[in-house]
Image 1 (cartoon, rainbow, N blue to C red):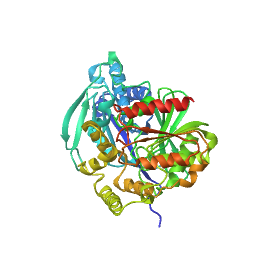
Image 2 (tube, rainbow, N blue to C red):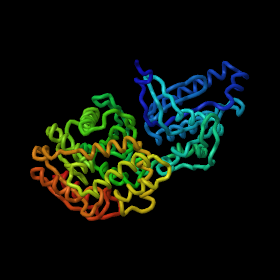
Image 3 (cartoon, helix red, strand yellow):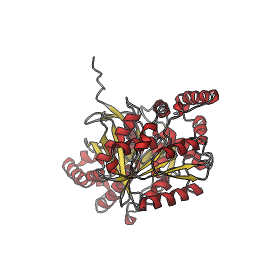
Image 4 (cartoon, helix red, strand yellow):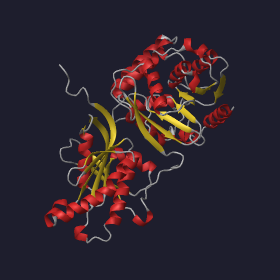
Length: 471
């Protein structure tokens, strides 16, 4: 028996819902003029969705329903819509003005070829319904991302009970902008962090989200777990690395399967699938030859790709990685019990609102983090990957073993590892470097698996990688 939903897939998306306040009244007063005016406004407004990387789902009546892979783009689009409409309404009598109300939500949606479904859409529609004419209402999920990245006036409206939505929704309004000052929403580092998010398809049909930022020779970053193309550019965990890497290079990065904006529910989570994903993104991005950066478990994937496609890799940079996964390393009984407990806690506690378990994981990745950085990393875990998928990736990573591939790496290679980090043993990085012919090995100071912007390891990483890439 065929499952009716077998052709549908679930993904995280920003949903924009809009309609015109008082549309029924306008139609009742002058139907022909209202239809004419609406079509005129739509001719200007609807193309904005595509310009901001979105896709229009429906334009029934006076409404607009659109989805965006980027929540920042969705919000910028909404602000520009309201700014343009304010200008178009200037010469219109107040009683005949068309004022959009807009709601934006971030949530999982189910989609087929033409439609999308899910509570994420319902919440966006309810937020639109409570927005002021000419105003924008956003959910907490949207606010948590755009408030740090965009300059706008946000007003906290508090928890609101919305029709047919089970739980109250924490709502924020974006104040009307000064149309003489332009859209009024700008992202920090807009020049070097301006990105285009696109999608490609892996060999098994999984949709992968990838982006390109910066200018110059291409640098591809291998996907690893706990990434989100959009969220990472705002977080103190990743943004400093991407900002610096994009200064003189075109940085290509992607969310690995099960993570971020890529398909979150997937059948195959395996090392071979991860390598296939890298191959798919490299082909889709149309970069013939590039430097390849692997971080953490992404190092093994980068090694496998460089062995399969040496003609496409100019330089190989490996940071915080390993050739042999945790389950295949020599471990004590206590270490085996700790790993088993970690898997259990991951399945039970990862997705909960209370970050107590995720804080345990954060303390292993970044023991030197400030409270703000730890809070960001706690949220990064919940935002990027589900508990089930996180556990499956962790198990798959444990079975990794590319030892046999190390002698076959023929491209220039730089290996960097932090001396005292707790997550991936220093010895694992040293052994990986020792197995690659001619590889340079650099020891970085510190304890963090993911280096922070203010620590010496980050400055040394940049110095070493830039010198290596320019050689």
